[in-house]
Amino acid sequence: MYVRHSTLPTRRMILAAAAGVSLAPSVTPARATEATMVEAIRALIGESTLQRGRVKLELPTIVENGNTVSLTVSVESPMSETDHVASIHIFNQKNPQPYVAAFNLGPRAGKASISTRIRLADSQRVVAIARLNDGSFWSSSADVIVTLAACTEQ
Amino acid sequence: MARVLINLPSQAKRGEIIEIKTLIAHPMESGYRLDNTGAAIPRDIINRFVCTYNGEEVFSAELFPAIAANPFIAFSTVATESGELVFAWTDDHGKTQTEVRQIIVE
Amino acid sequence: MRGLPLPALIVAAMATAAAETAPEAQRSGYDFAGREIRAMQDDDTTNPGMLWVMQGETLWAKKTGAADRSCADCHGDARISMKGAAARYPAFDAALDRPVDLEQRINQCRTERQHAQSLAWESEDLLALTAFVAHQSRGVPIAVRTDEQLRPFFALGNELFHRREGQLNLSCSQCHDDNWGKRLAGSVIPQGHPTGYPLYRLEWQSLGSLQRRLRNCMIGVRAAPYEYSAPEAVALELYLMERASGMPIETPAVRP
Image (cartoon, rainbow over all chains, first blue to last red):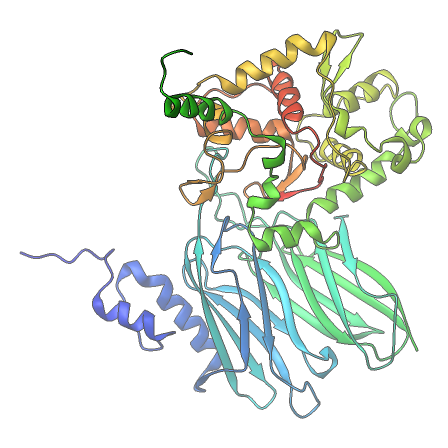
């Protein structure tokens, strides 16, 4: 009898991952965190759609240590009273929790741009979502390869 | 009192967008690390950061264990008037550390 | 060497030269680090190591011990009195008849002149003071003495650097002289120059000393690491600093 090992990705999962953030995933236990990230994003955006564009997520493609990864998110926006970014939310795919941070902005920010340093437990996708004052959601994602440091305390 | 590094201009022109960089010393214990007995080290992080400008909140952040140790947050704000910028970091125990910086806006 | 063909002679000459890196080829760990790590080190307002330097500046001025004396009371402005100091350590201590490193020298001042308690290795305060003192030498070329009384200690450090050790049976030299620039798993092997200590290692999520890093190296080859302050550790530090002669101090560096 052929038994599919849950640790190997199915062809469907590879295609879904290649297409970007999938909001209708097929999950096996090994990809449970992808589903958790999807649920967390769904909890944020509710019934709205996630539009691609306007958000620029800057992350290194490969990092020497997942403990401190520099991240910058900027959103094209006039940041006026009538047209501005209300908040920026960062999600990750493979850490124990899908949440990274949420930043509240507004017209007093002048420009929609934040930088921080995050932890990535493994090579994975990071998603940044901007919520505008008109209730629309825009997103961008980036894949990061995380390497382990050599010669540590372990 | 944790050590803090705040970088912002001491003066700016009215309407100018100023960049603010903040760094605070804190281990941001994620709650997922194990000690040498195999027990999880309890979570202990800064979970909220707020910046107010002459009393009005101009920026805030909700932080999770995925934020790196010694949290670095850089953001911007419009220099509207001279006064005080107050930065507050709150941890999981509800303790808040506050730092104040003056700005001259002409 | 009569009778040896020319190509063999050239290969033999190259093999000897490969053992030590020529001064022109000296490269700091900074050069092997990625762009983001270098950016973190370059900006004093965002370099996490500066949090310890700031703490050290506070401690420098703080009166302590039974003598109720601060570092500043004897040494004044560290910017002047400590400039170049870290570039010359480990240095020979005549009373102890052996070299001491910067951390040991700071503790000596604490116990003998401030009549205060010695600070533990890797404690926040010792890291802060060492970082603050070493930071005053940023940009100063490393120039330790290895002459006269220091010669046997330098020789020990040299021997330890070239000795195979641990279950992996590797010497420091095999990675850091012969294979720098190549990859060990995902990481690029640096030349192993102690230009930026104490430094902020992302792996530690904290500032740490050179001795801590050397212990990590030894654990890496599955050797029992030297105890903090062991004569072997200080001898190795002396050797490493001499090997890095002329390279500028970078404290506080940022490394993976």
